[in-house]
Image (cartoon, rainbow, N blue to C red; front, side):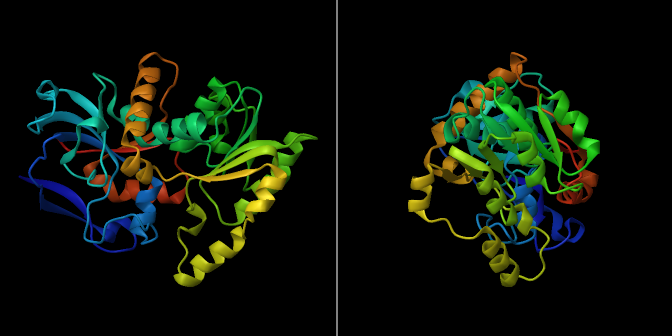
Length: 343
């Protein structure tokens, strides 16, 4: 069938990189579902893809996007027929920027009347945070945790999930305008990196203690700083490379990005009892899809029980799609950004 989608046609600014086009969807496979999309979410990886810096993105022209909310309108012959007509939040391995999306049955969870933008935040943002807190870093009560980009979608989720574990949270943000948001979510300390060196501020907060966990989507020059703050048993979780975004010198920018991170010698990690872990949720989805399903089911349950609260920054209509994309890239947004199709 045909549907409408924002197609990424070239690198650059969102106003010129995307084109609203009619695309052809393939036939449903046995255990797939087709969703009529109400709204889709934006993620920083989408910005990296638009800039040509995300190696996992499909070749252009392509439709990117990881998560949608909508109504299941058709299912494959071996999928649960009772899903038809159910309002769900669902993952998709790209293709989310479309009015209709095909995905796997195991990648959706019913959300009832939950507000669409909040449901979208539960998908990529909360699932990523849940996976890192519970499975990767295994955060424990009383541990000291640094969260970069703490006012963003994943950051606001990390604060809530770490505080559920009774950890001590230091939230790193770019401006004082975001402080109230992270304080209200439970952050014990707030560091504004635009005002002074964040590593010095974090060290002042730690006093004679050391950092137990760093959740870092920035990488680059922040890697060495965070690594120096980690104590025995410390874990650094890398889940992005936003410091590379916006660089205009191609391979030279990439090489400089890698140079700033330096090199980690495995024997050094063993001797210091430190760990550096990378998280790529697309790879988890490819090789451990049942893990994503479990995480999504758990965060939806937590939200329905009122134990977590997805933070939505802004909601956009489809006519403001490019504005939404550029707003996300600016680093000034808070929480999840969602785009709604005109109904």
